[in-house]
Amino acid sequence: MDLLLVLIKTGLVMGLLYALFAYGLSLIFSVNKVFHVAQGATFVFSAYVFMTLGTTFELPMLVAFLGAVVAAVVVVVAMQYLMYIPLARRNADPMVVLVASLLMVAFGQYVIELVW
Image (cartoon, rainbow, N blue to C red):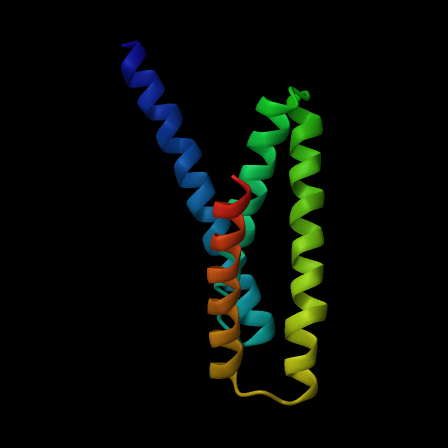
């Protein structure tokens, strides 16, 4: 019975995370008309920051959560100003923006591997 409850809780949490991720993708696509795949890298980066703040620095869960949100906001604002705004000024093709987003995913993976 305990295993069933754990499986139900895990399934609900994973389903909510998938729904949140899908909602973010659809919201970004409906507003910008560009499929922004670097959202996943930002999501993973903030999860690693949360884990590090909670386990390595032993901060309370709420503080670690707020730290992860702040880190994600900093990463997203940096991506916006360093990549998306210059591409928008040049009236870049949506395919160019998609490739730039894929490059940000690769860069994010390398940074995560380097740090963690």
